[in-house]
Image 1 (cartoon, helix red, strand yellow):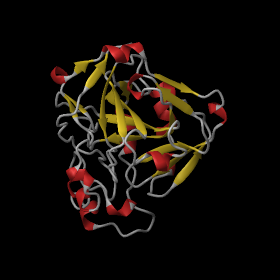
Image 2 (cartoon, helix red, strand yellow; image 1 turned 180 degrees about the vertical axis):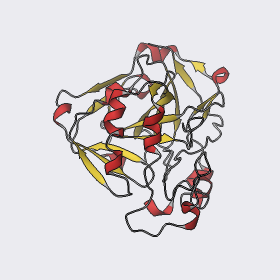
Image 3 (cartoon, one colour; image 1 turned 60 degrees about the vertical axis):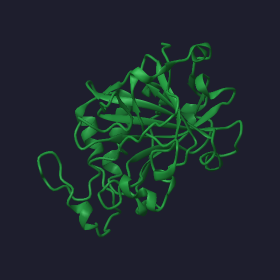
Image 4 (tube, one colour; image 1 turned 30 degrees about the vertical axis):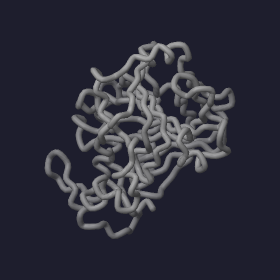
Length: 285
């Protein structure tokens, strides 16, 4: 399946509907533009603040970083690592499955969600599944209330120490399919902003199969990462070692018009219409 889609003109978001019709016909696709004047304040969200906490045994859990061909992904070999509850999630508790990142060919773009039409330089997604209703991630991924994703905007500034634990390993997983066990403990709770005010709405996965199963929680405040950290993301390759690179991928260019063969210069899906969905906000800190 990973070879069937990507972010080039030949296999990018505008083509995904051929294999996954919901990408074009769905009523709750993601990402969306967060139009702040259209957001509804919801006092009920203030009454049940979101809780995102690492399990006490989390430092003992082994994490793996992999190059999926569409970006990098960090996941753990056992659960629980961290749990998410509260806010728009009702009585359910969601378990962290993995986190990954989206970026652009330069730092004027890269986030999947936008705010009043303006993108950030990147966006982290921390993907959780509903452990109260399902026994595993795969079962939850295609169901209405199956997933919850925390979206964290990235802006250029100081290097982020926890983010660097991931970035420092990317040179060892350059090609699609390569993976590496992470020796250093990564605390996903340190990837959140210090202010937990957020927007929330019902949406989908932003990559195929684009299942409409996600409760999105997008934090208003970004975290800072350095330009060098994001540039390292753009050095990943979307093909396996020795694989013949399709011509349309080989001709990707960076901002200086230098041909960058097979590099993942960008991996974000453009926004889609929010339609009649409700976009709510919680101004809690």
